[in-house]
Length: 198
Image (cartoon, rainbow, N blue to C red; front, top):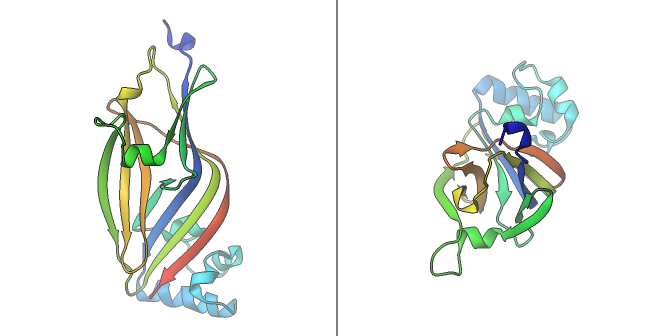
């Protein structure tokens, strides 16, 4: 079978997605951000969600909210009762997997492979943590193989500890065999966002 005849398998992440950004800034950058927030008559934690904030900054490296995650950037499907992984083979839904089935299997032997990792994020002086949640079709993955096997899927689950705040379980990566799958953004809406500063 040639590559042209192989029909792709789609893996869709529905539910609540999460993006966590951690930025650390020198004193000059921090003072510039605080100055712009004051000019906008708000706090820095709120100013980062205002598009005009980025136009007023003196820092040419920061153009949008994504640029604020200069230390760490986590993006994935959040553990929620609404979060489901759907596998479509030849445009037909073959399986729906709840997030809980991956991290807390109810069977004697786990049905799905999961690799767990711990991530600790600490807030501190001149550090900024941004959490943004989206709802809907969060991510899409494609697998092109002659014969798809669900046993070859490996979910990377990150337990993110936001020191002093909240913990999150997030599927951050998806592998098929030894290959890391590349996500394309889905069609979701921002449902919650906040920033933490000290």
